[in-house]
Length: 274
Image (cartoon, rainbow, N blue to C red; front, side, top):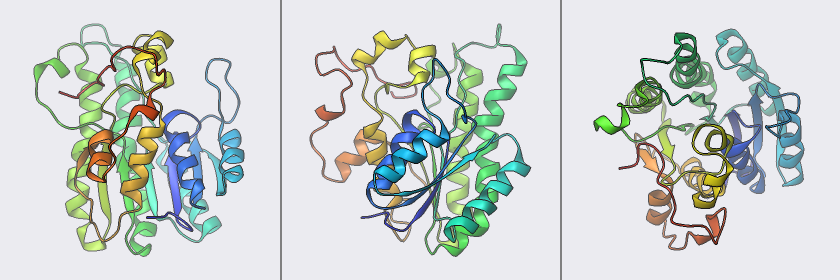
């Protein structure tokens, strides 16, 4: 189970879970395309495509940093072409870029819904479409969407239905593309954390850094993503997976190493996890 020599195109890879997936792949000697809008450092959000590229290469991988707005389908197509030309192809697409605002319908500004829809749901279609010609040639390509299991429980709609709709759209595309791309031998899956992960999304939308005490690090998502992306022959496809559950299927029994704060309280379940 190695990604040595494989090329991964990861959106939103300048920080958080995307960065961690990139670094995990780099340990195998993978080629990693770090595609994100963050080309310059932000005072509150450390990490850029260039700093992550340096980390990838230090970890043993090869890196190509590309500034990219996933809302722009022309730019997405050009980025895929450049990545494939640079590394000789694309073997996996990780749709990690995301936008979040946990508000109900009454007060959410429509422009914010447009942003979430474009970066969450629409970008999965746009990026998958642009990567498809290269994934077809890879001999067993992968698409991995960072999106949740589907639950119609009203608790996931009552307070933030607009966000839920855009994330569930990603998961529904997973199910559809898995069947649609079966003829090409491409695996398509979704991955979601069982507990909250210590990322900027949690810091600014779900309780601040104080919440990190009950969170896991992005490393658990990176290890789960690695297990999916290193599988072959559509052994894993069409599934809406939870990080801990997948790793348990792989035989892992210890998860304490993923805690952000070993002395923190009980872990907080993530959104959409019943």
